[in-house]
Amino acid sequence: MKPLIIAGKEFSSRLFTGTGKFSSNRTMGEAILASGSELVTVALKRVNIGDNADDMLMHIQYPGINLLPNTSGVRNAKEAIFAAQLAREALGTNWIKLEIHPDPKYLLADGEETLAATRALAKEGFIVLPYIQADPVLCKKLEDAGAAAVMPLGSPIGSNQGLQTREFLRIIIEQSNVPVVVDAGLGAPSHASEAMEMGADAVLINTAIAVANDPIRMAIAFKMAVEAGRMAFEAKLGIKSMGAHASSPLTSFLS
Amino acid sequence: MFSDELENISWEETTKTINAKTSGDVERAIQKSKDQLTVDDFMALISPAAEPYLEQMAELSRDYTQMRFGKTISMYVPLYLTNSCMNSCVYCGFQHSNPIKRIILTDDEIMNELKAIKKIGPFQNLLLVTGENPRDAGVEYIKNAIWISKPLFNNLSIEVMPLATDEYAQLTQAGLYGVVCFQETYNKARYNVYHPRGMKSKFDWRVNGFDRMGQAGVHKVGMGVLIGLENWRTDVSMMAYHLRYMQKNYWKTKYSVNFPRMRPSENGHFQPNVIMTDKEYVQLMLAFRLFDHDVDISVSTRENKEFRNNILQLGVTSMSAGSKTDPGGYATYPEALEQFAVSDERTPQVVENDIRKSGYEVVWKDWDECLQDDFKTQIA
Image (cartoon, rainbow over all chains, first blue to last red; front, side, top):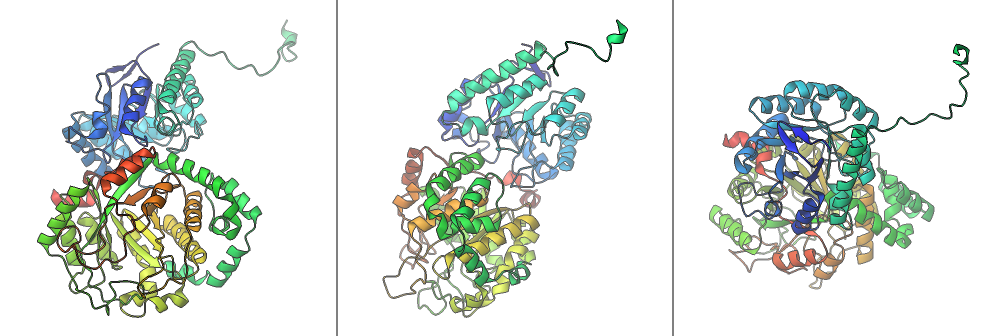
């Protein structure tokens, strides 16, 4: 399988994971290791940034696992920019997952603020991965603003509803010049497979692994699903047949 | 303002509607609960007709809670700053006419309390509590307490008298995250029986305080009904209406619901009019989770250890531990009078271990001041 490249960095795993909602930090660490994920997002609000002994951070300190701090909790571009600067200083990474959702109920992204923050942070040299609605026009604008990848949602965060935004994701994938990471709402390995078969470059999974009865086995299941989906995409799926083609009533006159 | 909405909701009709709910209504509400329920559905779930469905509701409540919050319980601790109060709430130990020693913590005493709290647990969520004494412990006093607490705690909330919009805005600027305020009861006709004098006797000022919090951009608003005053089913249905109203009008704010229940008094003080059983308490909690998958449900140390351990998986999302409900109780005046009796006296460490044993992670920190614009402009 082709490696994924974001901002010049190569990833052999196309499964990104999250750190929230696990029943313990130990289970979280084991699940992430089992998933083979090389990019792990961490909410700034949950960790003691600047504290090397932070329990959550300690459990994901493995070679090959890169931190992707996220700004979950901020309500506008200004707050997001400040949080990103702080994360860079404290965690030593210029990668940032922009999450600006002023609506704490459905955690839907504010496109306008996300675009403004992406532009500002990209200028400051951040590798910006914005989380957004599956809005094809916004994705193009983010690309122009300097986003290193775009992260449209499959369905609302934590909803496990799968690819409810399928038709828009299709357009985004078709048009994008930066990697497309389907984030949020993927509740089953089959959802992840489907996104990868469609040509998504990666997926980000958190709730479905964290809340599973056995998070470690679920992490492995997602790993396999992502690989299967990607392999199918690279091998070029056959086109679905619309029905039998025994006779050609419309074109038989040509023969 | 919500007081206008409330004019159109009849207490009596609501009570009748709840009592008329059938098992069919309950089953329909349960089936629909994957999507957002209406207050009418909520009434079915808290009605007597729903009692046979508790196990089914519990399973759904657990699943919805885990989906949204994960297998985690967020921890907070209260700090009572003063027991001085101009109100006369008939059920409260801090009422004005009660001849107890009144304490207003000084800056040094506040700092001592904060340090004492840090010794009992790695708390980051602090709830600052006062009585209503605008002259000696008003907005400036509260703001000062926020400034003192800020370096030690990432997330600060207050439970104080209702304030004006610009006062909430000022405190938010000073680094405040959340405001907790209990309406106590939504029965306007009976409200003054319990709150006869003082600012708290003004029903509309209190109930519209939530609008003012929303307008001021408070990040999180905690609502509450005190169980023991009026028919709890009707009262919490009113709170459900209020929650939906708030969510529609102040959509950037997070919400929590609280429904502390009074116990029968053994010392001749106020006797609750209503005693809520454990079963009813659980039913209410499950109903709230089915009604709203995202609302924070908070359970304090008013509830005892066994009960708190048993309800861990049923929908609760935040808990206090090690609480002292008297000003100075952690370090300065360990002998002062409590506002209410704490039933769960486990140390935060023991609570944490018990939560872990149930397969849940304890979250001490779920906010960071670096995410709050209002505060940063102050330090910049």
